[in-house]
Length: 279
Ligand code: KMH
Ligand code: ZN
Image 1 (cartoon, helix red, strand yellow):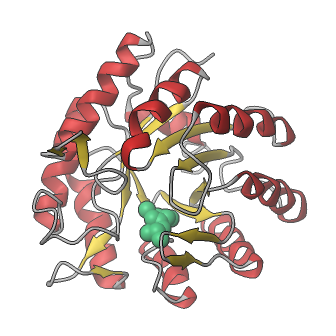
Image 2 (cartoon, rainbow, N blue to C red; image 1 turned 30 degrees about the vertical axis):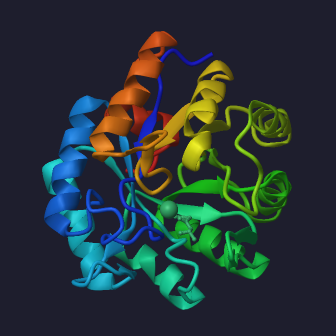
């Protein structure tokens, strides 16, 4: 079992409104300050969604490029852009995210009901994302919202080959209304399915809303890594809104230390994720 923990922070997301969640980082300055502070606490990867001047989710390429540059200048975090965007984003805009040349991008492995909405990920779109990332040397994080998404990943790798860098890393996104539940049993089922993926495949997990803590504990105990942040939960405890992403990262670091698997450095994260093979 790995001796350290990769901690990803997902600070903003595309789902919460700034008006409802004032602590959400939505400007580039807010994002950079958050990134620096989360890196100082022990995060090694940042999963990024950006907002426009009105704090609405956007996939504007100029803003994405500026964001990647600013995060690289101010931190040594691995910069992972979301190719998922918001549920309303068209496929062409989601593919264009790769033109901002991040270290990594997310690649969701299937369609899933998403509350009252549908997060659409057609097979041809997934293949397009995967092969464009291969061509450009962008390392994917495969987002798994349901058990069947792991079967889709197996099929993708069989038909289209390993990702850039050669290492496979998946993130179990658990507890989305419409996806798999955020339970230990569901996490163990996912981990069992990893036997069908290339040896050495690694996983992180995140629990949406109140499943955050059970999923974090289950992932650590199963040898997995962690993703936390205000994209996934805006409530720290019953009746207590999250004050900042730093609060969530600090809690994850505390759990990782208790599990005797302290946070991994960004350099070690690059090694693990195959980003060094990619330089
Ligand atoms: N905002 C969700 C619809 C990703 O970043 O790749 C999709 C999402 C996944 O957040
Ligand atoms: Zn996301």
